[in-house]
Amino acid sequence: MDDKVNTGHNIEDKKLIINARKPVGELGNQILDRMNESHESMAQWGVSHFEINENDIILDIGCGGGRNLERFAEQITTGKVVGIDYSEVSVEKSIDFNQKAVADGKVEVIQASVSEMPFEDNTFDIVTGFETIYFWPDFIGDLREVNRVLKKDGLIFLCNEAVYREGEMDKYADLIELLDMNIYSSEVLEESLKKTGFSDFKAYFNDENDWICVTARKI
Image 1: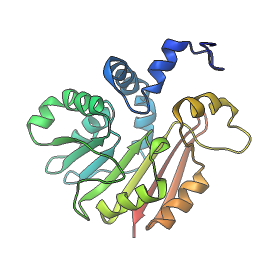
Image 2: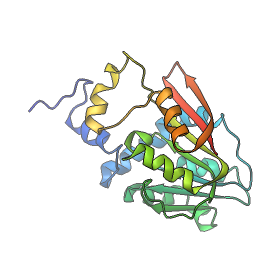
Image 3: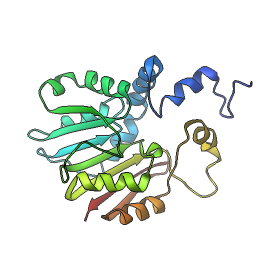
Image 4: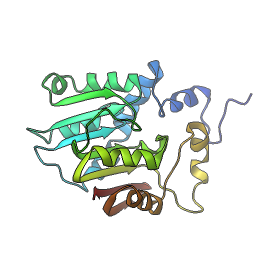
């Protein structure tokens, strides 16, 4: 069997990249370290498009290596930051990355799925998802679940390194096949958010890097 994919990754690279979907074991730890570093520029760009108040209760879905939990915790005082991830390795990495904030009760990390989150209705002021909606198993149903746990007028923020554009998807073909991922256009994101109880949709593009982030508020 050929050990190459079209992008030129060898079999070991492929094993590592596959862990981007659900990190496990040592390769999972490696990909989380890489993502904490490689996603930093995108995350900084993305979070510039909304404000955090010192008393906000924030949920980060698919918290990965925990860098964004740290980022949000630095901006709150009386609030709290909660991260969820369905990967046990990601939960462990996020806790380790935020040891002091976890010990202080400022950050909490839970192993859970976006499809069935262990939170009461109307809990959070802000819900974020960085590089994660590609893998949500039921996008519309999962957005409804996000809506459930958000407070009225609460903010949803989604940020991706890839955006669907007609005729420009060949560059993602290998990753889509390797990771079984869905890449959404801004139009689909807007339609999906409106369908699941959100309004005030805004989309922002970084054309140099092909990044997209969107915000909307719970009706």
